[in-house]
Length: 143
Image (cartoon, rainbow, N blue to C red):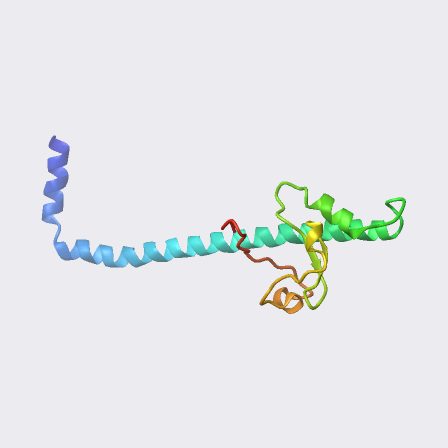
């Protein structure tokens, strides 16, 4: 393999301090670019999740406003709207609470009346004027 011998001979002629200097300059640059890429991907994922959650909330609010105006032709039940909305394949559950965390409507009707978010303040935890999200550990270990 004459090509490999040329490369090996060329590397033998380059002083070691040049190779080390190149690694010292390029190593931190590579690490910085990698960390920035990971951070921007994480920020983008958070932004997408937040926007998706806000879209679900807005559609639920729109349905609730329509139902309160008599658009559902009969008695309006927020619980029914929550049940139907939670049937979407990419939703785990929906919950509406008051300022103290008492569940007013939930996609699981058995949870209505209980308290949601032990250890958090629902109204202050996510902010009233802005949407938000968080990871929740389920009983089976999924998040």
